[in-house]
Length: 268
Image (cartoon, rainbow, N blue to C red; front, side, top):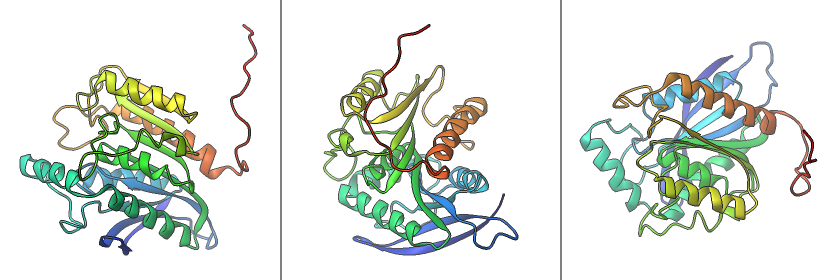
């Protein structure tokens, strides 16, 4: 599928925020409607790898909006994948208030729903910091599906100013379906931290899938300057999981989800 690229500047509670837009196009179908995704980046804003990921999603028929998460502090340009850029990104991550992160997400969802080409169904995805922001975006009942890649700081309650986020406590507010992806060797989220997240999702009745990849480290889907961690084969498998969830929930006309746990018959 072909796509177009543009940007829009949205008004948020903490100033204007640029979102980068990737829109699928189908020649000869001027009235085509598409589901839409909010794509949250890692601590470096919308870098080359994030833009390439967005293009892949748009090429599969999704309108993608990638916010500039640090608009309070810097312009929309990406931070460099170096020590200076890493330090700046980690600094901004805890200077920004939790309410500002949520305001950005809500404004982006509202913008996507206002597009005449959107079919009214919204999902979200992201990696690293963006994995956590996608998780928080899913607290919005308008968001029906989320895929969170190696989401940081959920287990430690340390996102945002004051490092006292309530993401785990609010797990029960998630009404959409999640896919949570981590590497078994991710040293940003400990095994105990991953167990804590998984247990909380179970206890809260969230519908979710969980995938921990043997041998994978943090940032294993980043195809540029990943410090030897990029794994194309595993990235492809995870992308197929994303396409399955978004295709089933956002593209199919299933109607609202009803009922609780499915009763499983004890058969061989």
